[in-house]
Length: 356
Image (cartoon, rainbow, N blue to C red; front, side):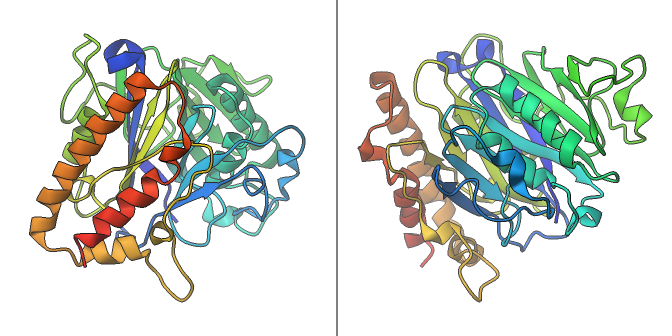
């Protein structure tokens, strides 16, 4: 299982309507034919079941749970490599190593931590603290993991090695975070208790990557508050690799209105379209984004792989229309009504009609 992700973050000063926009291309050269599922969990479901690493999820008990939308890097997992909750918190894995050894042990994998954190965190500060607490309690000695956590106001990187962790708050106005290696070095804004911050965290744990930077793809934020979700779609498409890029996701996190989360559910953003999800009163998503019994792929993935070239042009037009219609809706409403309950379901089912 791979949890690598090529991530792009644009802070609110650059974005239309003052939102924070977070995009992620899942990357795995060895499993391009493996389906990525999209699953919604209500408060009664999000903390049920097992964990991917084998730890009892006692850390999940207590307090109110939150509704969560998850992308899973492969079928059969309980957690996800990307997700968001109804409070406008989004979390993605950027890199994970050594996690195969953690399976079946009393540990949590990165996918578990994404789910268990989103189920409880009401803002990004709580998310960072919760990631740290789960790592300190259930991290595997040989695992190394990077997370990126965002809400409408801020973005944080969290690097973890075994049961220790360090976190850095993003100060750049926009940033690309390639997968591979631990990314927190000498700037540490939060960390494990007693951590020595005098040396690079990544170097100390023998997993230093190239530093995050502004090596951008596609439309570049201009610093004038005009960057949009469509620009992020094009950024992920420009950054995608047909041999390794899997499902792509974009979260538009609004501090004053409705946050919206966009999923391809199919490989390679350059050959896919984004479909929206919002936390309406009773969301219902399509079973086409989930792997059914005795199958290896979602039906959306299977039909997408059999598409005719002309379908993509028509679907891109529908994607643009969907963006425009939702932006207009969001400009008039500050909460999602029940008319958006089946938004993702309707968009997925409209897409597959072009593939049949």
